[in-house]
Image 1 (cartoon, rainbow, N blue to C red):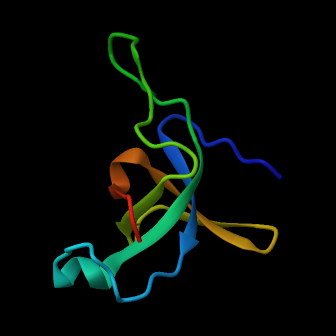
Image 2 (cartoon, helix red, strand yellow):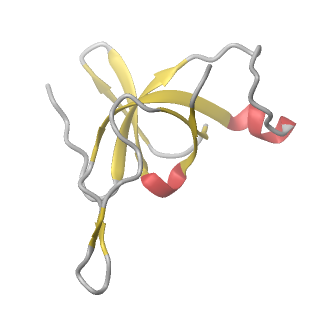
Image 3 (tube, rainbow, N blue to C red):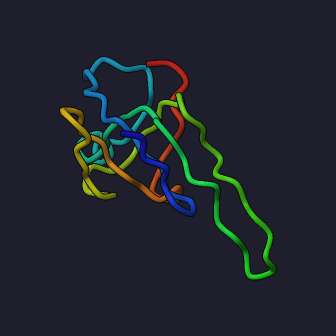
Length: 95
């Protein structure tokens, strides 16, 4: 099954993250942060003037997001979360 998110939504496969990291995050963010890999993205949002603003992340990006954000879904045996682009905290380069 292929799922194409709508508007500026992003489909993310959750990744379990170990505590050993070089990313500096506050303690409060460590407790409520999750990591994942972007699987697919929507086309973007349309401004009031009718201009399409594309999503800034792309499939394959590793991202960080808050634990209780988005909508959890299951496709086959895999678990995913659908987030709005604005709910992403960061793109993670190295982990």
